[in-house]
Length: 89
Image 1 (cartoon, rainbow, N blue to C red):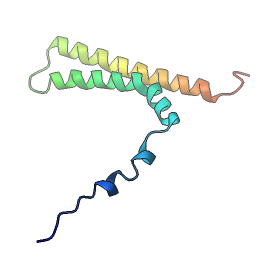
Image 2 (image 1 turned 135 degrees about the horizontal axis):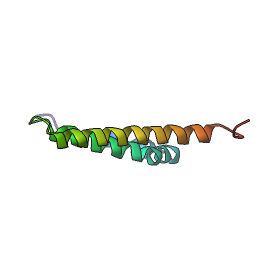
Image 3 (image 1 turned 60 degrees about the vertical axis):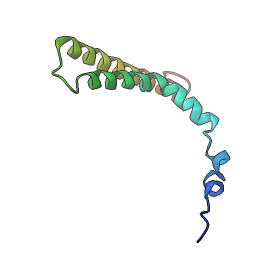
């Protein structure tokens, strides 16, 4: 009978190197409004999966879609402002 050997050491040997960097955490924090708006949009869609959407469901989806697009636009504008040195000419 052969012994069963675990590979725990091999799997977790590089765990310290797999942690997110400060720059990656900052990027996630910057994108958090977009992520949360997308979650709200998915929630609105999930509610309507097992039934025909009512007018209230359609409004909720439209509002969530507008919030998601506004969050994406705000993120794009924030990135554009940060990447343009010196301002307008």
